[in-house]
Amino acid sequence: MSFKPVVLWTDALVYLLVAVVLVLVWHIRRNEHLLAPWRRVGHSASGMSALTVLVFFIITGLLDTVHFRPATELGNGDNGAVSETAYSVEVLSLLDLIAAPLRTRVEKTYSAPFAAHLYARETVELPDGGQTREFPRLKYGGAHLQDPELELMPDIMARAATGAVGGLLLCGVLIALLAVTLARQRNETFMSALAAIRCRTTATPWYAVSIMLALILVLLGAALALCSSYHIFGTDKVGQDVFYLSLKSIRTGLVIGTLTTLMMLPFALLLGITAGYFRGWVDDVIQYLYTTLSSIPSVLLIAAAVLMMQVYIETRPELFDTVAARADLRLLFLCVILGVTSWTGLCRLLRGETLKLREMEYIQAAHAFGVSHWRIISRHILPNVMHIVLISTVMDFSGLVLAEAVLSYVGVGVDPSMISFGTMINAARMEMAREPMVWWALLAAFSFMFALVLSANLFADAVQNAFDPRAKNLSTRVKAFHRKKIQKKPEVETASARPEDSFL
Image (cartoon, rainbow, N blue to C red; front, side):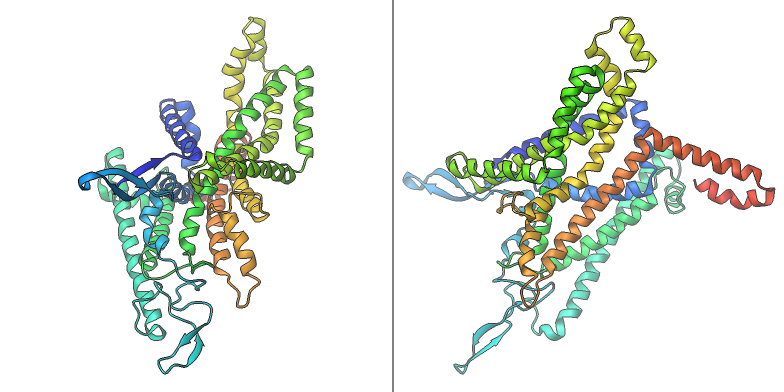
């Protein structure tokens, strides 16, 4: 199939972000002092389980980031020769290509999850010329069933079981590959490595990763087996599959959460370190700036900026060749305005940490030897505040995903043509008031967003425990306190406490 690659603004920034992350991973692997905190993250069972879930979200988001315009028709020149290739105005992604049945199988209107009939009655002509009102059959959902009343539930159970078994088999293959890798690293047999995973004796909690991977693959296998014949999350008002809309919303949430952080970091790093290092009137000006910005309700500021951008887009349609380009520019601008209004909290933290660091002996010694300010900031201040930047960045991700949902709910978020959790919830708001109630769109958006935000929060907790020196010291003190308490107990009680101590 002929196609024309399309790189939107957010696509380019996501590619840049992926490249930066790969370079950072390469750099961290070559430096042991940078790798040590990440090893502590890898020892967290909750953190690794959350990372397993996040990987599936990230893969889905990256598949939805590679865009192209498929060829629609070929123009014929003289003697039937091909003279020109025309491309569709619709911008598709790799996810759209993979989920083509979900995207193209559009029903007439609402249908409930796993339903074989529409959710609204219609007037149907009878063979004898009469009319009756009934729930008509869906065009695609359960269309293969002859008698849905009798065949629907057994067919769903059989397909779900088949998909779940396929997911379990795939999980078994992945665990076997993991055991082979561990066996090579530890110079032991395959069965010993497999037993180490099962008995939880590995440093990295691979048992937790395996359990979470099995759960995800079982659910994914069942969903893939069912979505070929049913709308597993129902359809919306215009008949679009809600499962497909939920998958498309993942990219918007990831873009908001990651690109906004990129927009925020330069302001927070530059102003926070500058205020804490130079103090005096520079500190006063920066404090006045972020205090004033914090005093303005962020929703009002974002709404005003988004409305101005909307007017600019509407008055210059010649600048955008597709609807996706226009929606993408609004998404990028939303990331920018969220970044501009979100840097104040991190700036305060960096200012306070820099005020403490500049009084350290080695910084004072650098001043005494005449080292320049730029060299002191780049060699001594910036590396020592990066753990705060990393912790704040990871913990702000879930808040930004929720912010997009709230802003889209009040109508100042992403473009209405762009699918996101916020637009799904906003569309489901009116559907909740109709009779009978349409609840599945809201439930699907909430479930996907909850899984994304919860996994991000759990991973952020693991990162904070690994990188925050205060948390590390507190954990060390707690362990030392337990060791002293055990040593003071009689020998019998100490022996009974050994299994728990070895687990820690």
